[in-house]
Length: 282
Image (cartoon, rainbow, N blue to C red):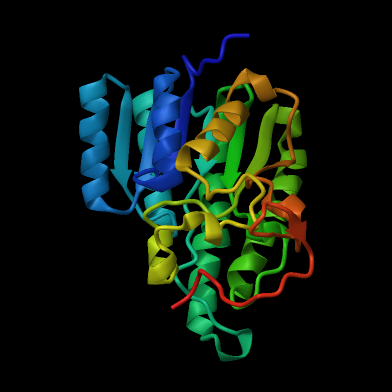
């Protein structure tokens, strides 16, 4: 089977950097027509210049996907330019650097985390569905969530709870749209090196040249790269996944499978490590 997106139109939210940008690049290389909703004006300009120079039929639109009017404008522009929508990648999301115990977390921070990690998912998808249905050729909705949607995470409870919500959103919508042959799935990344999560900023200075220490709990021994998730997004957008819906691809280097296991210096594993220091933190 040929892996191609020729003739398909894809909309990627937050596609100006990191995982979103890697998905945009992968889709473009496979022949897709692409629209990007991106809040950063400089990244919008760079994307549009990149589309022009590479010959990709694409458009980047400055928009805040938390704003309903902006979302309506993006969908209208996709309709005007391409007349259809086959793939929606809900990539936008952010932990907003809001890390604190629940009892001291500000309610405004909870609201902000809800808006960017769950509410906007409903808004974008709601307004995209009619255009996807109109094509009468099925389609694929891909929600980029987090591995935190499948485990507990201290000092990060609001973000974690909303990512759990993405899992429910995916499963319910997959059933709701099944008769339209529109598939709905999730990609759940483990810690990935991006502009949003620059690992050097989280690691103690003495460990920044030893990233393998910080990644000891990941069986494959490294943090993720945006291209890791782009590969999963290609699978879910193409005909390779025509019978896959309502599920999640954990792109996590085996992190979820490891559970509470920790890698020892000799390469072995233990569930009862003696912790003398952590590579992460201030």
